[in-house]
Length: 315
Image (cartoon, rainbow, N blue to C red; front, top):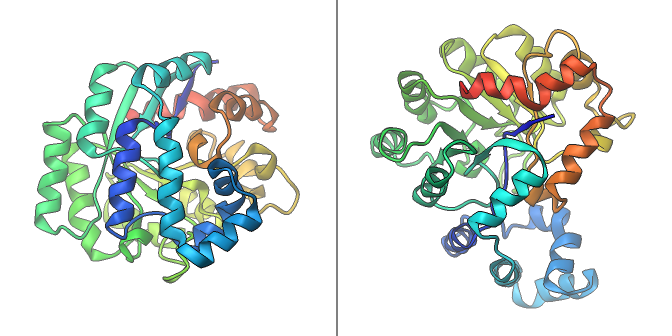
């Protein structure tokens, strides 16, 4: 089965370079909430035990360790050809890039996608605090750079999904006929309120912008039932399950029961596969193979893994 990956990490030199820039500007992933969850993987990547990592965090700070992690990432950076080969091996027909946790600049994302226009779909991201200039940047990103969607992680901007500051961007997406992907669910930045990305706020956005194609990224945990209920209300809301292992989705008590149940039924045309493999630190091929364990009808699996995303992306 051919697959469309709605969130595909591309850990290229350009992506690592921009990650370093964001860390240096205070907008990186070097935050305690991330460390609580990612420390085992990060420490292993750097070559430390978890105990050594935690000791170093106390002595030199998390930012220093994050930059060390970037040094390792830079040494292991993938070439553009490596990324395409990875997609080939995994039978990924099309991958969305520029909307993962660590990504390159908009210009670099668009440039990479332009090299492989049949394989890569570039997404546009900004912080959301640029005002009217940001809306112009979005329009230029679509018309000049060739970006095909707009990514919003509201918790990074310390705003709610339905904050008025985002509305000019949503309106521009309607005008440009591109989808918006809005991260939903709990976030890991423990220095700010936990519910900035609560999916309940999608309801207002969907009501105010009925022509806007909205993808709720990361499936809304722990408020999955809210997201599922809201998606049944609005024809323009889709859901992806990026950065989630299938074994966790289907485990009893995981909180994803409603996603699986309704996603196999009335929401079968609205669920999208998205790997987030770089965040998961699990090979793309493995994450796709694990999707065979999803308790779905074959026709529904085809929709989740390919057809629904093709519809959203207008392929």
